[in-house]
Each structure stands twice: as structure tokens, then as C-alpha cells.
Image (cartoon, rainbow, N blue to C red; front, top):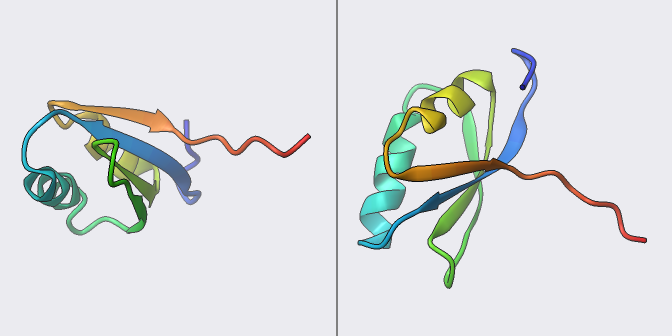
Length: 76
């Protein structure tokens, strides 16, 4: 759970299909909400985003995607 004013890195995975279309659909779900594209992956059908709690809720409500919180692991 993200506190209202905090942001979180998430990875949004999507199914087969047009990578460009899926990315547009994901970003459209965040229209009007603060977000930042962190990375777009070439091999894995996924995009990494920084979102707030409202953005996370919007992504989780989007059909056909899997949202995973990206928790950094410090080097050992």
C-alpha cells in the first residue's frame, strides 16, 4: 500500500499484442494522474512506472495487465 503522497516504482506486464498499443492503453489509464515512465523493456512485454496511490489503483483496475511493486534490493 502506498501512502497518499508517496510514489512507488511498479512494473506493469501486459500480454501479447502491439507493444505500442498496450503502452498507450496503460498510459491512458494514468491520464491526469502524476506518473513517470522509468523504463520500457524490449524483450519482456512490460513497462516500469513511478506512480502514486491513485495511479496504482488505476493500473490494478486495468484488465489484461499484471502490476508488481518493484522493491529495490540492496547489493550484498
